[in-house]
Amino acid sequence: MNISNALLAKQIFEQIKASDKIVVCSHVKPDGDAFGSSFGLAYILRDNFPQKNILVSSVEHAHIRFFPSGDFITDEFMSQSLVIIVDTASGIRVYDQRWSQGKFIIKIDHHPLFESFGDIELVNDSYPSCCEIIIDLIREWELKISQKSAEYLFAGLTTDTGRFRFPGVGKATFERASFLCSLGVHPSDVYDSIYQEKASVLRFRGWVSSNFVNNNGFAYVKVKKDITFHYGISPEQANSMVNLLSDLEDVKIWTFFCEDPVSGQIKVEFRSCSIAVNEIARKFGGWGHRLASGTVVENWKVVDSIIEYINEMLKSS
Ligand SMILES: [Mn+2]
Image (tube, protein in one colour):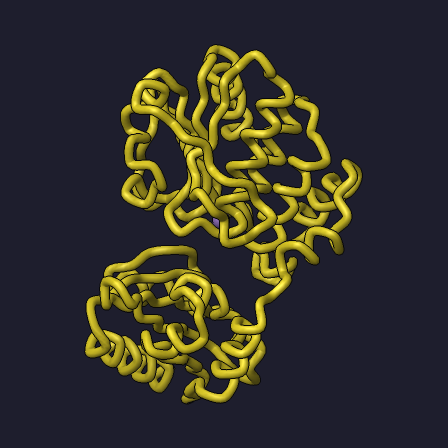
């Protein structure tokens, strides 16, 4: 942990020690890292400070069955709490929009700084997963970590790094993973519970494999609402599989366009091995990491203009 983070780490710990009520919160449509960093942090704080009241604001039924359900939080509790928001770059994406009513707000995130909010912000985009920031903080604070909490953190670390594949993964990430293993995490057990797939999901993978378009290093698939309906999967689940196209030979940019059956909007996930796709995302109203970003657009016409834009970009590069 570098020195500016070490100072922030100290300030955060002081706030935690001084608070009787704490709410840990993450982003809407939570992924493994959102679940892992919020439940990991909350469970560790509960174990170390049993006299404090620590709640997690999260979905009622996690689509990754490995994780527990969120807690019921009253308005009163929220307004009396230290609110810690993890893995979330913008205030509007926080799962519980009452977060701003908290007594004191702390943001801990690994996305490129998108918007400043909170009373203390610890943002470091050199971390491949938010869980790894939590791991470094907990070690800095010398707190004890149960096997369960270590598993939550491992689950977040492994999902956000694509099982140790994505850029940014190196010595530090493996060292943190190794540290979690020393606390009793068995990676294969975690994988067994988070990577089990329903038959419908596996069949959808097959559909993607036979229906993607591949053009000059740009691979994409348009997932219209009748497809997600047919396979019985949610648009989030569909989009989380964008990296199905990552191993394609000579692919430079790969993208999933997935229609939300309720709003009719199209959620777009951009990935790349070197081209800065967050600039493309930004051009179309989105945001994210340099090599992994997304946006939401209104209709398939906009999707076609994105496709044209990327095709032109790759032609001229
Ligand atoms: Mn994350």
